[in-house]
Amino acid sequence: MSKLKYTLLAFSFILSLHASFAQDDPTSGQVLDKIVAKVDNNIILESDVQRTFIEAIAQSQQGITPPTRCEVFETLLVNKLMVAKAEIDSVIVAPAEVELQTENRFSMVLQQIGGDENMILQMYGKTADQLKSEMYDLIEEQMVVQRMRDKITEGVTVSPAEVRAFFESIPTDSLPFFSAEVTVGQIVKKPEVNEQTKQKIYDQLLGFKEDILAGRADFADLARRYSEDPGSGAQGGDLGFFGRGQLAPEYEATALALRQGEISDPVETQFGFHMIQLLEVRGATYNTRHILMVPKATEEDIQRTERFLDSLRTEIMEGNIEFAKAAKENSDDRATSDNGGYFTDPGTSSNRLTLRTLEDPVLYFTIDSMEVGTITKPIQFEDPREGTKLRILYYQNRYPAHRANLNDDYEKMKAAALRKKEDDLLSVWFVTAKEDVFIDIDPAYDRCNALAGR
Figure 1 (tube, rainbow, N blue to C red):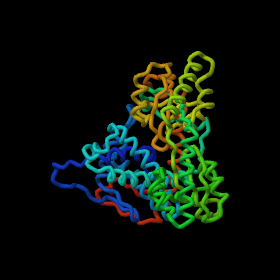
Figure 2 (cartoon, helix red, strand yellow):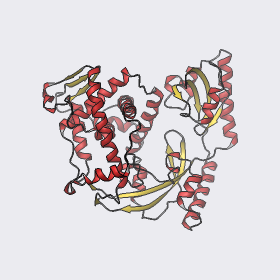
Figure 3 (cartoon, helix red, strand yellow):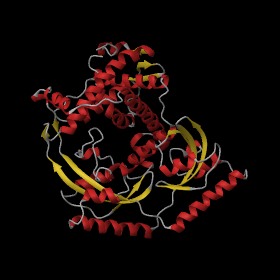
Figure 4 (spheres, one colour):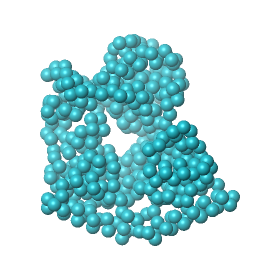
């Protein structure tokens, strides 16, 4: 392929979410759509190309040439090829993983419309269940594509010299113009639930175990009714196969100490209390099902955590402890605490990011109203997976819009250089992989020459 734009893969999922959930125009009187490509059992619709193309143009940054329609089509074709090859190569994503991501994404959509599920039908022309179903399919495909990409490009790295060479290969008048960026950190605390509430949950799960062993109840039925794990609950608690080190340490240790078919006593992890049944061990992987119940913090528990964060905020503001050190030692959010509490751009791993990178709309508007150098009072928020939490936010710095340069934008250039190196490898892979599947392209897209070699 002469001009494969694999860089679109990084954001095509986000674009397709926004585009695919747009309500169809009921006044048109007709549906102008057709299949424009088939890759084994996977299809690309004309509407897929059109919507992704429009969103790609809308999302393109100033100074960066937006993709052409052919480039969008080629990217969608590569996605479908990766999905088809994943099936051939047995690269799978567990349904529980997809369910969890779907619940998280749905919660974000719900937040953006004020938390009212009734508004979904009005805004998207779909019920909440229909929207979730569409999200599930999109998320599953994107996760499979990413897993295939990771497999194909495993071990690819770039050196500082390669980054500099990549930057210097870009004509000066073609250097991108980056929007204003910010550096933002957080310290998150999950309220410690009191022991009385925990014991009540423990005893309830222990009662479930006794009922199952006595034949009075079925594990899967109880999981569907009571489990608070949105990913596995609907699957009767089945998590699918995971490798060692992929699940919470306490969960894994308990699961692997069981005999096949045995059910554990309740065990506590950061997510709550689990009752686990070991289903199968296969090599270095194991399959379990569980019932998760999450103890809910009382108002007193929440106030105690609020007082702790307020005290920590004072210590930071008075210079008694650095924010990054406080975050590493105290924050319960591993995604940011290991980085000194700072949010990172998922595409570059840089601490500098545009505000629109922050997917949580509440977080976006909070930062947008803050002054540089300030720290908020404790703010309560809802985690889709773990319930009520509190956090303080630190607005460390703001960087004005600017033309790309190697000093200020090294991490972005490094990510772009790595992406290009991966793209070259993927182009080679594509030439071979396309021979393993059936591909049929509508004549309207012959001009894109999507199946040509480099």
